[in-house]
Every structure is written in C-alpha cells, then in structure tokens.
Length: 333
Image 1 (cartoon, rainbow, N blue to C red):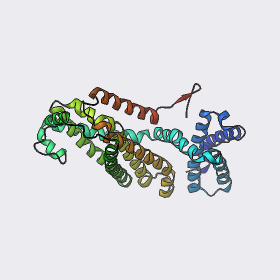
Image 2 (cartoon, one colour):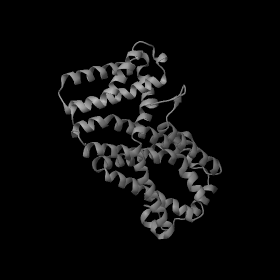
Image 3 (cartoon, one colour):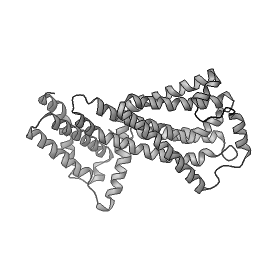
Image 4 (cartoon, rainbow, N blue to C red):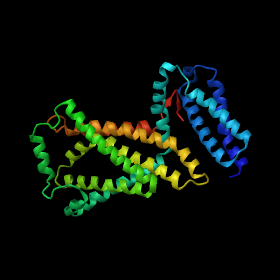
C-alpha cells in the first residue's frame, strides 16, 4: 500500500481526534458531553488501528511518532478519572459505549451468523412437518414414544418443577454451563475454518426447528414458544454472537488481506474480546431465566405473559446493541 495514500486517507481521523483532545483536556468530563466522549472513544480506536497498520507498512519515524503520541494522549483521557472509580468507570464505558459500537460495526457478521441459524431452523422445521419420522434423526435423545401433547398435559397437572430460588439457580448454572460450551464450539470452528462456524450454527438450528415442529405438529406450539421464548430470546442471540465473533476471528486469521496475519489478528482482538465477553454475560442471564421463569407452567405464569417477556427481552437486546442512542438531539457515533 502507498504510504502517502494511507496518510492522506487517514489524516482526517487523526485531525479530528487531535481537535477533540484539545477540548477534552481543558474541560471537565461532564462539560464535554456524552456524544463527544463517545466520538472521542471511536476516533481513539480508529487511530489505534491505524497505528497497527502503519507499523506493518513502514518504519517512518515521523508518522509513527505522531500516531504514538496521539493514541497515548487519547489513552490517558479515555482511562483517566478518580482512582476510586476507575474500575467502575471502565466497566461502565465498556458495557455502555464500546460494546454497542463494536456490535454495530460488526453487524454484517452477526447478520450472516443469524441467517445460518435461521436457515437451519427452517430446514429442521420443514423436514419434520413433511415427515414426522425425520424427528428421530434430527432431534437427538428423543424417545420414539415421545408425545409433546402428553408431556405438556402431564406438566400442567404436576407441581412446578422449580419451587425455590436455590433450585432455580442451581438448574440455571447447569444450563448456562452447557450453553457456554455450545458458544465456545461455535466460536472455535468459526475462528479455525470460518465455514465451520456457519455449519455449527446451521446444525444447531436444525435441532431447534425440528423440535419446534414436533410441538406444532401436536397442537401445542404455543406452549413451545412460551417455554423456549423467555430464555431463547437471549440464549439464541448469544450463540449467534459467539459464532459471529469466531467468524470475525477466522477472517482476521485466514483472510488478513493487505496486512500481515499477526497485524490482522492484533487489530481484530479488541473486537473479538468484546463480543465474547458480551456473549458470556448474555448466556449467564439466559441460563438463570431458563432455570427459573421459563420452567413455570400456565398454572403459575400464563403463556401470553411468557411470550410477551420474550419479545421484550429480545427487543431490548437488539435496541441496546444495534440502535444508536440520541442525546441532546444528536445521535451517538
């Protein structure tokens, strides 16, 4: 890559960051405002990425010194603050600023991962609706005599399976441990092969779609949605996020483009790390919901309420991660 062209293309970002730092270093953080802080963080991350690229392209001391000084100044601002609140501020900034920015930037990988899971679900659903016997192959561990309707009727007649907070927490811990294993597999296959990440999402979708078809086939589809919905609204997106993070890592490792493989992975690491941490948080929340609220039958919580909760949880997750907030009449970066 032509270094002069690189400087010409990237200089506007560096100039914006320098200008914003001049303001930020001379006012209190509350005076700077939420929007400008977010803009500064975005420009800082872009400058860090540009510095890594510049190191792989050239040894030009003037360019590298400028970028080192610029990112150093920005780093000191981004991570400054009263030492008593440093950790809290860093966690808050990570969750409320950096994570949403990362997910919006990587939305292409999230969408393609979601499509893989949805296509698998559609395939499994149609396969069982077409021929119920296909469920023997597509739904692992299902007994031949399994009847969703009879199972639902027995659940509604019995006492609730979860009758204490301790029992629900214990059950939830077992569930999110399993979910984390699935997420790790999706990430690993995506990072190592790219295609493998899409395949494991498609494969998991097949089982979900086939199971759902069994319930709809037996006329208890509403129960299935109410049963899966509250935790699935978080669990399924989290598995998609893990797959998307793995696919992003796979692109960095296997398709580095003009960068060296090491530089490509180094540039991608902050994004991948943030996506994985978010995935783990969401999976733990999903496991706790699955171990408690999702287990309640209509005797305790109506199907309509459980489905409504699922829709609200899913909507809030998408809103938080992918929709830009507006403050003082301006959208965040």
